[in-house]
Amino acid sequence: MTFQEAWAYSSTIKGWYTEAEARLLWECADSISGPFCEIGSYRGRSTAILASFHTNIHCIEPFILAPGSPNDTPESQG
Image 1 (cartoon, one colour):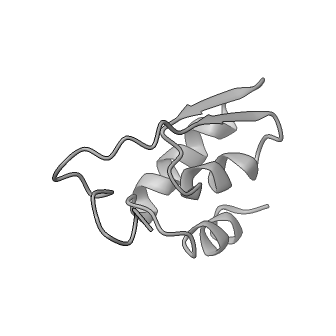
Image 2: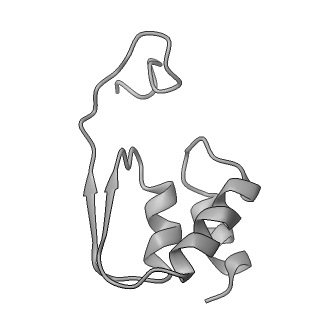
């Protein structure tokens, strides 16, 4: 899978990072072998980028809504 294919899919998932940040994650993930542990996976946008390289990913999302944070919206609470 190419970065553009991974970005085309992951960009359909609501999230906060930009294409440039996704590319950096892509480049870092490409250089690491073994399982991943992602803390703060929210809706899975970055997980989709990681999954384009690895199938052994453990995602932890505490779902803590901090007042004023980007995830502190009525939409995210529904």
